[in-house]
Image (cartoon, rainbow, N blue to C red):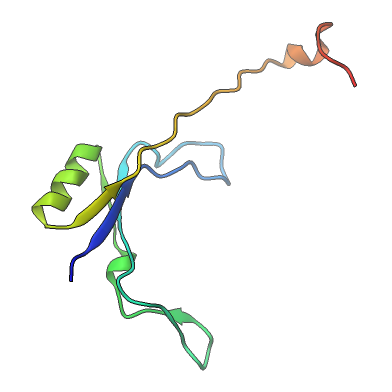
Length: 100
């Protein structure tokens, strides 16, 4: 059985304004077994524990090198470019502002 993984840069947490944890690259394994619902409690379970493993790397090249050294099939997802919407508080009172 061959492991499959994805390499990506994590997105910013939507619940906070900071960007902590977005500078490194992460490797996550794809699920290799189907999930099942436990009949008594209704919890979702799986016999595959590799899905719980997340490995962080400083750069993309070291994550790729890790996959190649351990014979892991991988897909790299490039991060989207961050768009800045620069605004100033004074723009709210500008005479050129379109008023509805």
